[in-house]
Image 1 (cartoon, rainbow, N blue to C red):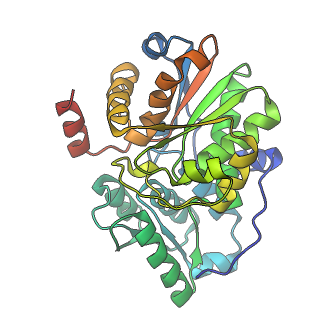
Image 2 (image 1 turned 135 degrees about the vertical axis):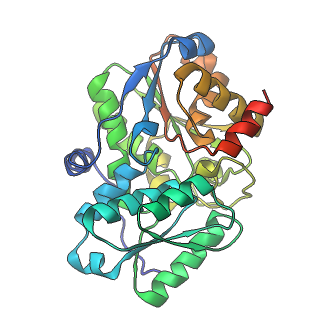
Amino acid sequence: MPTARVLAVPTLDDVRAAAGAIAPHLPRTPLYGSAGLTELIGTETLVKHENHLPTGAFKVRGGVNLVSRLSDGDRGRGLIAASTGNHGQSLAFAGRRFGVDVTICVPVGANPTKVGAIRALGAEIVEHGRDFDDAREHCERRAADRGHRYVHSGDEPDLVAGVGTHTLEILEDEPSIDAIVVPIGGGSGAAGACVVAKALRPECEVIGVQAEAAPAAYHSWRDRALREDSMATAAEGLATRAGFALPQRILWEHLDEFVLVSEDELGSATRAMIEHTRNLVESAGASPLAAALQLRDRLAGKRVVLVCTGGNITLEQLARLLEQR
């Protein structure tokens, strides 16, 4: 197992420093109003398009921030991480930018679009296990055996600070936002949103959403204790079997609401996001819409941002989605 480290909760200053670190490498992403989604939800709705980043997902913000801050010693050891796809792409992208070797452990049968992108960015791929947590446990053993710098997908302050820059951009562009809805798998994105929103606009609600078929993070938040649970969702960005310590510490203090959505709701929301935004959207990236539709009454009269965390849907996934219409 990797050596336990004391994990500091990142601050707004850390997020602002991360924004400076990633600026030479990543563009700001657009925040667009959506007339179609506004009509569907019944309140003013905007979309933060993290799917426009070079890897097609928000996690690259954290990867670039973390790798930019590593010591020469850690860079020389090489990095290793477990991922269902977007975290792996994030580190592979950052590793190529900073000349660091990266190994990514993925579950057997992981999203081939994401795995292909990781490989194309120069990272080594190791396939192991049936799901993310099997791959993570193998990754931790391999890190200990080979001396690599293990990069957990949530328990890394620099990752949380890096991904929190999406909310910094939101509130810089639109300071009067009332609610931000963010997907939760491990929870780094929602934790980063909480750090920023509660510092800059405390009255802004941060609402998390997870698949009810993979509710470990939800149960960890509800019980204020790390829980494990089943993992049966097709939305790989939401597919974790255990709560992550650092994001949960932040969510326990600052997250306003946490919603579980069904697989059918995720499918409907993904189709609606593609139709109304004219963007490719993966299921995790569409989950904020599924949550907002559940919370219509609560959100009425508010200015709401849906964080579209990724667009890495495969052609096969897209075809199945459209067949179900």
